[in-house]
Image (cartoon, rainbow, N blue to C red; front, side):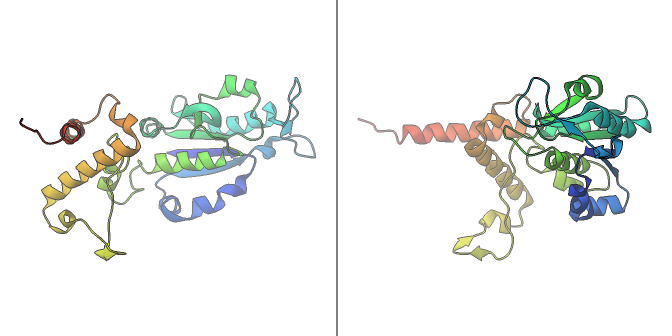
Length: 256
């Protein structure tokens, strides 16, 4: 897998690509990253990459010529059909784990970092396969979302994360939020680690974690439990929790 990051500010990615999981994975060549500066494709002495929008209005728009040149360079060495060009934009489709898994199936992702008021629409129409957003809020540019895409996709690639089971149990991988975690000490500020986790009973620990994951999802993201395609074991626990809640609402039976 190769990522090409097309940006006005290449230096933003320096520490991200050196540190932690991404830095280690790049060092052992689990995937490749190339950062492409848009200004390198300008033709004037001021290296102008943006201009005022036609029709007036505030802000600036990324010019089509240098941006298109940067994207075309990214695509030049890639076989047809194995690349996907993504524009990071607040107008795009919201990034989800399902979409991340789909993107991990490509050989090459070109991540175009929008800036200012946006990019010339003709670049979108001719060179962009899809627009992506992290959520319903505004950032100054697409560099931070591009980092999120790189890390989310890279985690699914062979040799990036040490233990495969750690990926399989993560939030959203099973369609729900992850269970709570504990480590030493056993008691912290008067709060003790749940006894089940100290029992050594692996079946009981697995059941507790699933129950806690479903309860946390119901409290924080109930919309996830209404989605189709939930695993059967999640549905079973959710049905049981709902039945318990209905029983508590009714209260003890009173015989007159």
